[in-house]
Length: 537
Image 1 (cartoon, helix red, strand yellow):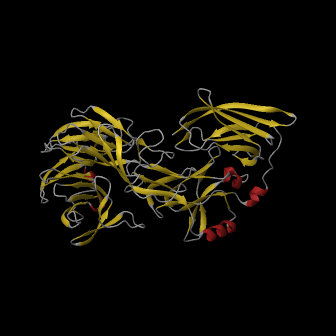
Image 2 (cartoon, rainbow, N blue to C red; image 1 turned 45 degrees about the vertical axis):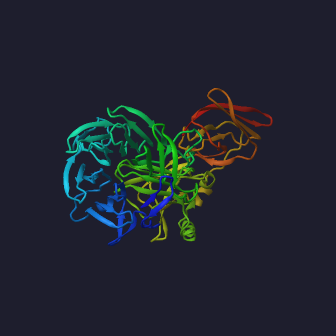
């Protein structure tokens, strides 16, 4: 838990974060060291006391500004909450808790006495809604964030129902505000005229008036090419995943950007950032990090295409996932691959946290190196390194020869690598034909999405020179390259052949592009081809 001044200066910090156990945070209080588990919501009352929704421990804590424990609501015994995610306090000290797992709001006096409980109204899903329970069409909502105005109206951000539900002080339903996304945090002005909602799915903040009319929306989800600062190249406000919101007395909106691990302040109503309080950056571009939502699932991907796709409800709770280079057991892994007759066709990738188990299978995507795959692209498989057996275990896999990736499913995180067919099989493969004629031409991936680099593949045998020109949709020349180096031997699933491959690097704006390729060889007619591809950021 950290406390900052209005200018971003660190005022106080309670406890610490363990590198090996990120979900546990220690808070030093008057009764000793308490362990928080997945704390999600925080509020401050008029005296400076802190209220924490300790989600994983099914409780809400009240701490003094010095970190002493003043009040504890819930816990394992008696268990009055189920994964509470939000907490708010009004001017009189009344405590409002979003009891997420039970689909209800609970209201307590300043001393912890229960005053009221009220359920969120049922959610009726459309026929194509993927959140519907198989056994019932109507379900209770899931309150995540909570706020209260000066009149005692309670605002609950219902993530499951994609709405904000408004109650009066007695729990009577007043209104519902639909949100086209996944509402998480919510904040409201004292008079109720300004309602702000964090849409974690689309990476934006929405502003509504008292009557429910949306009059401001700002922000977007960041991509691989967006800088982690407040002013990206296109001038837009970029969020990782906006989650918690707070509106201070001066009208400044504070946004907890969870995936980017920072706080940001905005002066309404412009939606332009006035302050950013970043978390320290760690690692480099060879490692991808992202928080995967337990309800929605998600994907974490590196620039080279190594990724993991987690489906809805595969996790018991939200998880910070890493996709990084593997360094452990290098000698043992190499010795085992030789002993097992396997040839590595990709760098090893560590998916973490190591040992994470999933309730449903997740999909791993690993890019392979064509030059290492030999002639057996169709036989490539993802292999799991079993540290107990100190051996590789191959998984059922699917090869995409165009995208140069291999996918497989697993129920746990560990170290994985693409393995090629045995050397004996490679030795028996036919040789590539150097004759100069067109075999195939394509761009992969097409479209290039989320920072992926479009790569041109031209198989024409052996040429003297290949010239590439790229144009935008208006016909303006935006890039050109000449390839006069020898081609590689590539097998994209149709047998080995000589091919020229050129990746277009650099910052590439979204759009549709046209290209021409000319391959030349002395004494023969040139091969001229054109095509188009698209880039989506």
